Length: 263
Image (cartoon, rainbow, N blue to C red; front, side, top):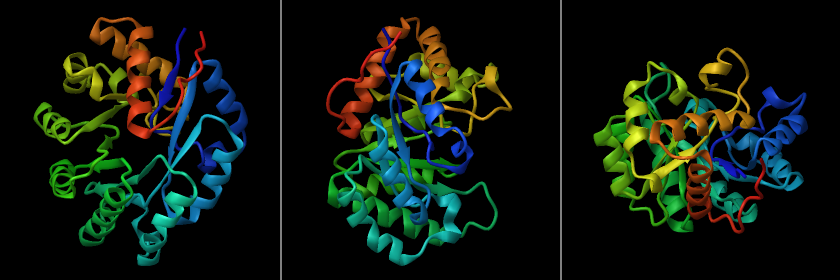
């Protein structure tokens, strides 16, 4: 019997507006009993909170995503702690740095990210981190932040040395659909050999579909495909790896009680 936690799924976005309940039902049927749902901008916090109240197994994180930088304001940083506490958030995020897109001011990105790291430290919450073409800068800021609870760098695509630096800081690596692409040799080798206690599985729904689902909207039920690939690469059973990664997520995000198993 398999029980999984999707450690990163944007199930609240409009891509799921027409069939969100069915998507969640398919996830549960596939054994994905829990999903961590990170916020993107302050405008989405109320709807995210309402969604997680309606559906058992959805756990919210609140933060300011760097790709939505133009929407963020200082007052959002000011109001974030009350939202995190009032809504029982499991993490701060999605937050981080993105140096891949033109027009995203690096200084404002750093201000938003550092402020959210300070909030996470003060509230003793983990962080869910986005790092695209900015991993060294992210690691430097994480080292300075000295977070008690650590966190996860989602959709990790860095080097083994960068991974080791993150593990030394108590950070997990979020691994999703890109693992299933044969060309992702560095990532596949890393997942095959990394310490299991730092591994989290994710879909990043509706983005980053696995190789078999490429070109389609991703959804949490596809986490089973990521699990299968990771288990194959690590030469261990899907059931064992599911149990390990589910326990990792429960420990990091403070989720109480085991996820109900499904076949």
